[in-house]
Image (tube, rainbow over all chains, first blue to last red; front, side):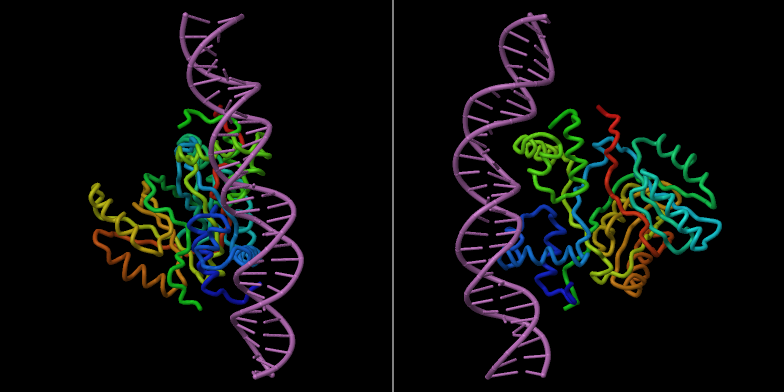
Length: 160
Length: 160
DNA sequence: AGCAAAATGCTAGTTTATTGCTTATTTGCG
DNA sequence: CGCAAATAAGCAATAAACTAGCATTTTGCT
């Protein structure tokens, strides 16, 4: 595992973020080295966990998932046991795509996707609100997506 | 553009979601057809917009981005003009990775990433709260990521 | 400067991507 | 039901990419 990333590594990460299916040859060309060392760097970045994986983004609407919503949950008790218990539950709910434990007025924020409003409402009523230790649940249905650039901005590394 | 997806298309999407860098040969093998028609299907899915793109997921922490937070913003006025004005602003903030307009107690939810807490706080104070028409701002710092599977669950399509 | 470790580029063999073409399958309609 | 058109699949061939091994260069340290 590398102790530190040089400017070529940063460029590699930047290019890969923009296009996860770029060929290694093209990637090498863009960052200005030949293909073999480029591939070795990518493998090393994967190995080090800096690259967590490669994903294909799909259009949820077109696939029949009409509803995206945020669900904010507050628990009654927040001992480590309570938190882990809720986490375990969250992981089992297929509607939950992303979830974070947060500080503030709520304990968890979850981004959920459902085929339709009814499915979502059933999920909230039957599953979420009825879960042990859940104090309050607030939902926010998304009306439109404003921005979707999950990428880290690798422009001015300020790092090397 | 295809009117409807068959089961092979669904399998393709499922496999690609799981591994965005799988080779076409391997993908074809998994879905049970030969490589050329498989590639043609993928291209068609891209063309139709069902595949929105390919991304590489990076470990933000390791890259020096310590802070991930959700910011919920409510506006004073919500005419279409006001909303669009705020959206335009959101798109220009590099800290904002994802943003949705939502219904409920707040108007916008944004997922933000910053190098450190100070950067984030400066962003909130200097940029967000001082933006025209912003009524209230609530922030929730993430303590840990519970789940991160942005993928649509393509298991029981109930669709074809 | 000089050595050791690490990284690069080159070459070549293998695998994959991609295209044109033919055959098979599905679809729609009489 | 059966035919014709349209659609999709498979095959073969070529171009491109992947990847391992090796010689060379660069880097980091004393």
